Length: 117
Image (cartoon, rainbow, N blue to C red; front, side):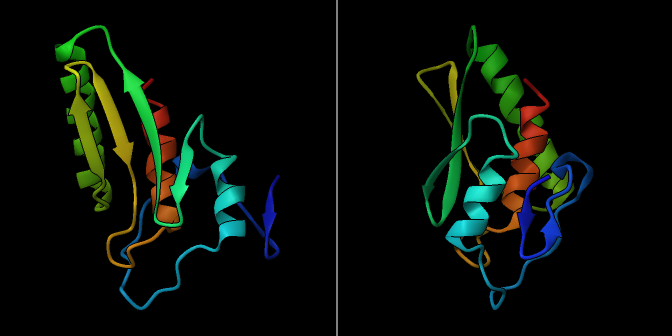
């Protein structure tokens, strides 16, 4: 188990996103580094987002994936940036827009997106 400030990071797929307000403190770099270990092949872009690229056989599969991610994001109430490009590639960038940086919500979504593949 990973420990951060005496708190265990649980299985993120079992958590749900919670509303985040503009005044909340974003994750520290140390917390971000610990949380990135709990998701599969996501990268830390900067202190403001993480990202992962997915590649599919064709446009239809890529679009189906985008729609699944969109439905998940809507269900969780945590919206992320999705880029479908070169007809079969998708790049996902979770960030917490309310604080313009990372929060646990971004990693919760990332872990749930990982379950799609």
